[in-house]
Image (cartoon, rainbow, N blue to C red; front, side):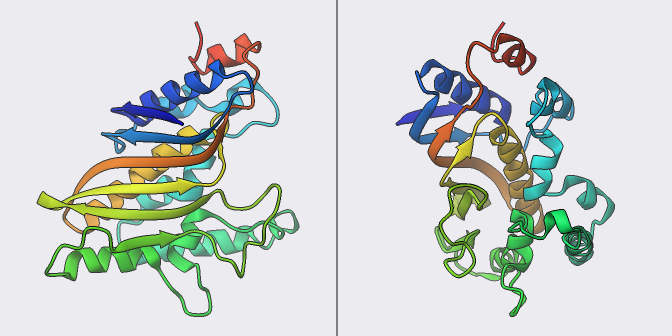
Length: 240
């Protein structure tokens, strides 16, 4: 098991990635991160640390962020209901393309419209409870990102973020706890952390609370670029 504590998402990711690279196979089980200021986002990171800067078969950092919390759409739609509606309109339009039809969707879609038949907006439900419960409930607010009826076991391609929970601390401070079954620390993890930090800020702002920590449990974490690729790793500032 690896444990990482850091102030920002970037610092936590760099520390965890460096530890994974020190392992012979670059894999670890039960990597636990605690990020004390996950809402801090420097827009320069989106280019300086984007995996797509090193070549083919890589991810664009901003695209990874958008799967969990679409920052650009949020900036244009301050009203929450308009924000949700516009995201779903764009997402459903994109899913009409043949190349997208076999995909399971996005995490943000599952947060706001997971059960399409019953129109369950998990995100709005949590915000409503934070605003209406007279008594603070420490561990009663959860998000489910997977379903046994939709997500059959598969080797690749299924959702990796499975569970999220808001921990409502004294003083109105909210922590976000997440569990990933499988976590790609080269392509995905930094974007995941940044997006989760913005998601936490969104929930806190909407409920007049204070954003606290992000705690992430990666059951299986890996960094799939060999340490010999010094040029690639240097571009991500993981080596000198």
